Image (tube, rainbow, N blue to C red; front, side, top):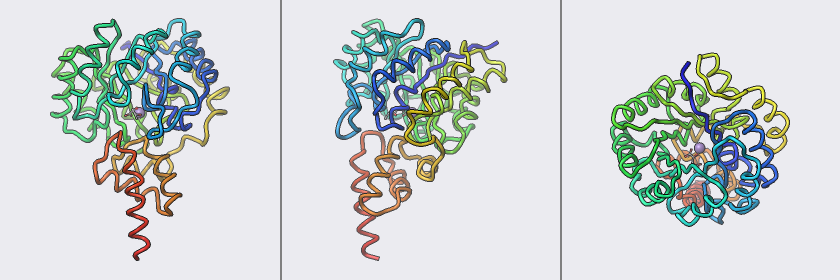
Length: 336
Ligand SMILES: CC[C@H](O)CC(=O)C(=O)O
Ligand SMILES: [Mn+2]
């Protein structure tokens, strides 16, 4: 049986879906149950990673340190990870995380900008952390470009490369070619992170595994940016049927969904019209709630904002453009 490593990102990507408002106590409860269910690694913190709590990305309910402290107390076997987007998070933020026992970092860059992660990867490696290069918005680059960027991560010392479908915009064949091409070119393992904007998160994740990915991400109830991530209890059940070993008790994941996650969700994690617009346009998953708010404020359709953001090939960190686009659309509407 092929063994696949599970990364749960409920306590990081899931934060986008609740406007980063989980409490440290909720995080501790969820982390303890993920640990008891046998999840290999959990990623914790603001949706935009360490240092993300800000006016631009949304203030979290608590500080990074408060979340790390709460989660560190309950973990027994599960590895403790953070996401670091260079420019949002810094090496200093990572040092703080390490004080609380964080032992894995995923350094996340736009798919064409792996070089912005060089110092962070080197720092993490020098300090004994497992270090993963996480290529966001992988649909925006050709397989050749993805390979070039993955090789850069590997040259800085990354232990693993993650292909990330941030916008939930890719079809299974697009995932497969990227993963196979990267695996042909690097000697480190490859993982995959899905979003469900086109309803393909589980299928795409299975396609990624078939293409050779040995780690996959998911969240309980699919809680995450846009239409959410691959729903972990569903994914692990499907993986079990497909003959993959995850080490996870998916009954325990289902119970966690029913007992805790259902009660903290702001809204059902469905493929809403706005989420579908993200997948269709290839816009950034975490732009959804920001676009909804801007649409309401300026009296325009959030889907139009998201389609325009996709057309402009906007990337994470350009949240301020959402307002610009909303104002432009409102002006055009007024001129009609
Ligand atoms: C804003 C960071 C983003 O949520 C990272 C991630 O999970 C993705 O690109 O899908
Ligand atoms: Mn994500």
